[in-house]
Image (tube, rainbow, N blue to C red):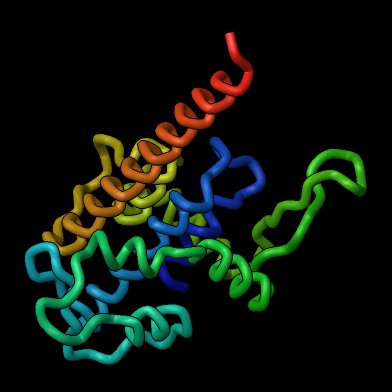
Length: 201
């Protein structure tokens, strides 16, 4: 399992701390992919740019798609731009992939058979690995989860991120999520102002 799949599973546990926005999650998943690709040597980070590496992509279909979509000519792509481009609807892509792999199941919320539908992890070895990684306080998983509002990112007992490239990616994820939230707030204010304009004094 990849970091992105572990992250998705953590966010859809039956008792989440809070609802996770799909846009936030998509950006965090793109960051998780980049972290795994850095670890595999398939990409490198040069300043704020994503540079193709010399190693092949890991044996994972979605990570392979991420590598295939890399910009391979200088000046290469900024990390932030890559997160927004790769992250577009990425949470839906992971949901579909995990459902196809039997890692997620659909359930209705509440008692009504017509209640809202949600997905929950199936009790599989992959889910247990993700849970073990979370419980062990894996620093990468912790800081990516904190970007979407789960957990506090790290505790005093957790080691920090010791890879400069990974730290750069994680910081870019947090910045992108904050930017997305700012856009949401601006739209809410604009919509409220528009509604007041039509409502009149």
